Image (cartoon, rainbow, N blue to C red):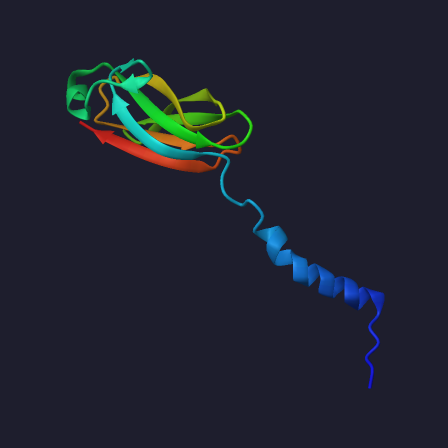
Length: 132
């Protein structure tokens, strides 16, 4: 006994067979944060101060190393002081296993500084909080 299938059912089978590979094709984010740190300054593209030295700082620097295997892109640092958004900085990220970049923001009298790192599409890839 032979089964005859219509072209519509064959198309449905073909879509079902390939859908999993299409759905899982490169669903990882554009970038990955491999290392990050709060500091009060950066020298030779590396953070110099420890977080302990930040208690008296008037400005806070957030240093980040980003893995980007694709085309050059950007990340956005979302700065929050005591839980309230205080600013955004867009930083360029080149193609690299560890692209180093950083942003700086005034601390004011804040008791906590939070930085959310967003990829170009706006997806959060990292979040860090510094409390004083």
